[in-house]
Image (cartoon, rainbow, N blue to C red):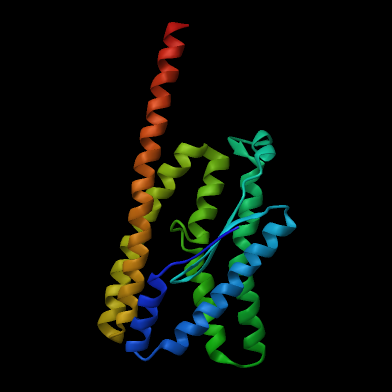
Amino acid sequence: MEFKIDIKIFLIAIVFLLVNQIEMYILFMLFAIIHECFHLLAGIILGYKVKSMRIMPLGLSICFKEKEEEYNTKIRKSNFNNVKKIIILIMGPISNIIIAFIFAILDIAEPVYINVLIAIFNLLPIYPLDGGQILNRVLRIIYGNFEAYRISNSINNIIMSIITALASIGILYTKNIAIFFIVIFMWYLTIKENKKYKEISKYFKYFHKLDKKSNYNI
């Protein structure tokens, strides 16, 4: 199993330290890691093996090894593997909702706020957040892989534009510079996905042309 630590985590930590919110960031990371542990538990229960783990600025990222045999089991325009991945992905936000509910009963406000924030943040339809991945997997089942990437990539950019506008208002009123760095990091992820989508588009267009030539010759 591969294990990595993203050095950008230290830069984000310094930012939160400078704005006197380091305790909030530590709690955020703690509950974000618990969130990922629920992904891990769901994956293990569903028979997946861990391929890699990576500590990132906004939590822990776990990658599972694909189960090749499940690619042969079709669900509409995709495969059964995507159904299992949706179950694994949804377990993270569910864990935070459960934790928030427990702390609400105990009448401890801060963990409730943080876990609700993590749940909402991860359910945003932005790749590679849980919401973005769930959207992509659902679209794969309905429309197939290429259309799923096209639609989810468009939604990704629209949502990020809206978040940037709202974050700008938030920074203006709260003077919280940490919001700025979080949005920058999210745009960094979005730009990476845009580049990935362009490469995938070239791949699909190339093979689509080959299919057309093949059909013509037949």
